Amino acid sequence: MTFDRIAIVGAGAWGTALANAAARAGRDVLLVARNPTVADTIARERTSPALPGVKLEAQVTIVDGAAAARGDAVLLAVPAQQLRAALLPLLESMRARSPLLVACAKGIERTTGLFMTEVIADVAASAETAILSGPSFAADVARGLPTAITLAASNEQTASALARALGSATFRPYHATDVRGVEIGGAAKNVLAIAAGIVKGRNLGASAAAALITRGFAELTRFGRACGAQPETLTGLSGLGDLILTCASPQSRNFSLGVAIGAGRSPKEAIGAGPLAEGAYTASILVAMAGRKGVDMPISAAVAAVLDDRLSVDEAVDQLLTRPFKAEIL
Image (cartoon, rainbow, N blue to C red; front, side, top):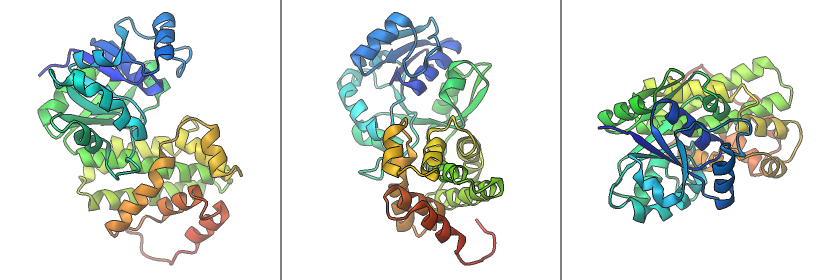
């Protein structure tokens, strides 16, 4: 099994970063910019407006959507809520080759409650799927700074082969078969990163931030366990690793959204003013799914309530601080 040609759908920051990473690994790369004007700009200037100052590697070719079918693997680097719409137009061109379809977004489809590989399976039932996730900022990956992520597919040979195809001295994928565990880590950590940002924006202190990350990880673990995720996945790169990264850096869109809300901006204003933060669209469906499984996720629930304007930030903080005392358990 080989993946010599990698197609990437989505020429935003993450798609551009993955294109450069795949090129540095020695692959031929086809990059699909869904906006024709953006595609023309990238082809002419060899840089994406989403990552100014970062030049595309020579092996990256800008193509239209139909050409993505020429890839041995297609990395879907589009926002979680846009994955279905981005994939549908590609189906006809992919019929003959059936490439591996790799979700690269971290979220849950809000209207259906489906994880990213489930969305792909719902649209392209016969396709083999995988998920790429982990602690990674697009700017770091695009510039070739050392990064480790997780690549998961139900078939271990597929996951291993793709990891070898994308891996380089500075981009290190670890392969796994726990697809659901990887997806849960990516989706839940975005919601928790908003909470961490609120703590920062409200000036609640480093001790509060540490407590929130720790108890947030307990929530992530409880939900993952209820969904059948493997413990080593949740404590690995795509779980704990990604949580640590996104809860502590202003480079995180979700953390920055939380900072803005904690500093006093309304959720609606903060969401509209900043770059896309996946956690804003994942929070309510994550909490609803947890509730159906009988999983207690108080921090995530508080974030969802703040985003939906059911609680103010101060009310949410008070609600969390007045919870009953109990033993520290996962």
